[in-house]
Length: 501
Ligand code: AHR
Image (tube, rainbow, N blue to C red; front, top):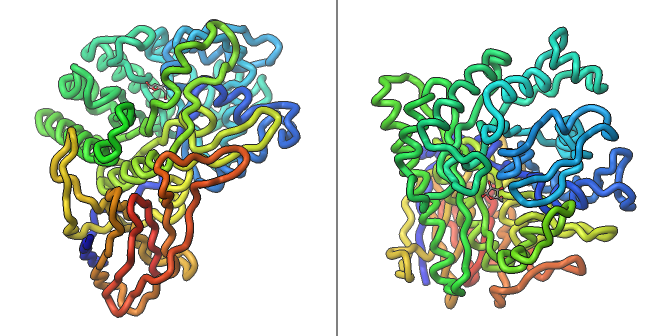
């Protein structure tokens, strides 16, 4: 099979925002307790945070981490999570039917994020909470001092403000499963007022309003338009969430699902621009794709979890080779819309539908999906290039005209010799055939292939585990770059990173 790509250095979609390589940690399952935090573990530091987990997070270069939820946040009182640990209340979490000890809270998590080289993207509660609790937590976190909430922070031993710049206005408020789910107009008004008070408290912050929790929600479209109409000038970003599964074992169809990611982005962008036009506003709303991943392997076992225990293992999907391809395709979809997607969070980061897993008392390890995420975050920063792609196509159960080749390229003029000037990310969706990829790379003449790395396993259900990695990138030899003409071979069903420098 043959495919062709044409790139020119000057034909750009836009600059990547580093925050598209964000992730997410919720008080859910073993993400926090017995995940990032495991006092007594041989790798635990003085605060109880696992250094081996931090190392893997650093490997992924995660610039922001959304916290503390997720569904959890809609019933969460942030004040429970600050102050002397022994005085913090133990609460019932109605989102996941567990017990929450509040041993880890806002200040501890901010400290963890700093250690992991990341910034906090904090979600406020707009379920049981409202504008007042939202503005109070901004004052507690960001106000330098001399006010009730900032002085309370200082009395808790945190002298310097956290300066959290990015705030989510609740979570998935369109979903009937959400604690205190709201209608669009109601949510739009509350979110707008909350945003106003939060920004009056700290004008330097940016806020993300909740879009739909999925493009298949019955209210999708109307929800976005109504919410934006209520608070357009107070919002900066609108959120999108999307999870895919292969419950029916139809891999051809599964690998095509990222086409829906692109359609979702295009549709929401259109709605944002429609409301902008109706408002005659100069402001453009950008997108925060703040939950995305594959999620289904753990669904059945999670129905058996006992209620009201602390941090039971939940959503512990063990990811396969084919899941890594879907994650790679979704990552490419986000990059292809770098002009509008400014924030994205792979959901989640540790133990809960996560690229990083931990054994209690044992090692931390990399899932298959770790690799496309880590490689995109490492090599996919710079200018996203737009180029015509010509690829054979196929039809699947739900999609037609699916290109076998999914690809995007990111150039980085300032790239070092080792990192490269241009990176091409490419997935060969064919389950049967390798692909000859020919590319014309105008403006990159004189460069060489630094590395062609591929993630491939003949067994699409191969998984990694604590004892070893079956699925990990390998270097492919044999690619050629002659002047502007690149020619490489992409193994069947593979994720590829071709670095030119
Ligand atoms: O990421 C797991 C859950 O998925 C989050 O809590 C919620 O926002 C979404 O439905």
